[in-house]
Picture 1 (cartoon, rainbow, N blue to C red):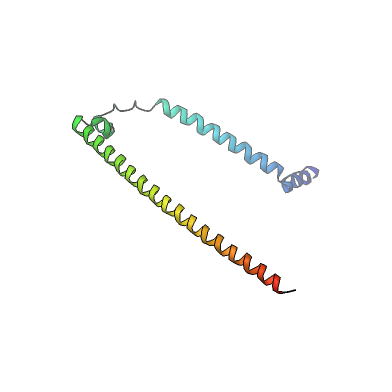
Picture 2 (picture 1 turned 90 degrees about the vertical axis):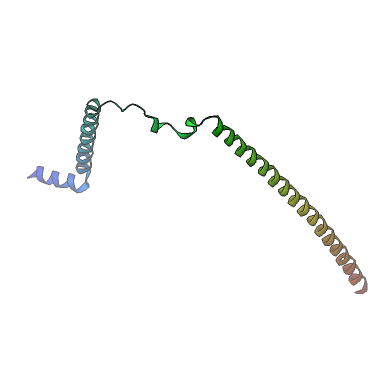
Length: 123
């Protein structure tokens, strides 16, 4: 009966159960890997590549290549125009920021003058 008590204690702490499940899992994984390797050897060879499997850019002739170049040139022109617009917006924002900074500086000077005048009147 001592071995039953020992077995109960081992199962109660689940160490035996963890070892058993881990071992079964490893055996199952090993069986699946060897099965997959065996199945791979019995597969038919891959089908030859047909014309439908070739990506479209490689099927294009000189006319399509010229059209693509025109599209790329159009995109580059639009990008240049957009970059110019962005630069103009940045310039305007910079000018507005300078003007606002000048206005804030004038306000601060006025407040400083007002504060000095207020402190001088308080004696």
